[in-house]
Length: 302
Image 1 (cartoon, helix red, strand yellow):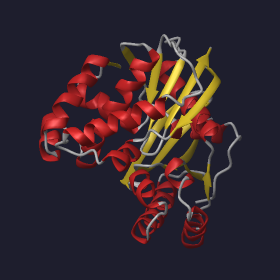
Image 2 (cartoon, one colour; image 1 turned 60 degrees about the vertical axis):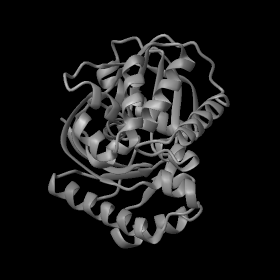
Image 3 (cartoon, helix red, strand yellow; image 1 turned 90 degrees about the horizontal axis):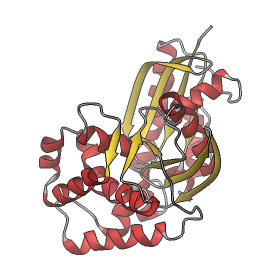
Image 4 (tube, helix red, strand yellow; image 1 turned 180 degrees about the horizontal axis):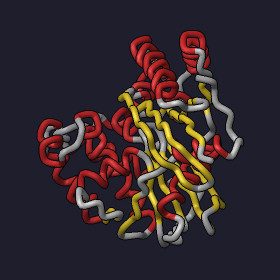
């Protein structure tokens, strides 16, 4: 029998809940809810999570708990990634969330983040014979080599969209100096990666990658080409956020990630020596739900 579980990740751009029914390697989405909370950019600038974002996080987790109960989930697992990891006050933030909602949030390390992402990605990519996985968020980029559906090597770099914005002043429209600073930061950071290319077939996951894909592929084609990223970079550099929203039919908050996201993914594709990547519609939350069903993760009662 399938079980209904809820998994939520507090990432560096959004806090996002998935309620799903799962059995073995099948996941059926029941509900999705997300709130834009830009931890990656804010923490990169200031080192801590400010009071207003803490209040947003508490309210988001409270809403996650409510929705999970309404959808008959047996348990809720909430975890946090790079934005929370790098905040100096994360212990106090997590204690406040638990005190006010009754939900314990677990900060997971980058290697575990990659494991859960790959678990979810394989739902729609298991037959593509991928040998690498990339996931860019607001605070970091996860890079992993894959063999027969299993991780063999991972690295985490401070290459999130919010981090790039904080380091360079990247914005829309983008002045040349800010764009050059962003390029320099991406190239320098990528140069520290412990994993060595080349890679042949890459799958990408996460909200930043899916945002780029949806901007370029309303047709649902599951690939993203380097030339498409070149076009996104060229066009979004010149446009205001309002025009980006209109041109690419994206949500206002996601629009601000198109330029830094395209810049990061183009650099990753150049580094890996590939001309296109496969885009997965699944990822870390689906992976967490599957681990809950397999009883390798225990959530909180709702």
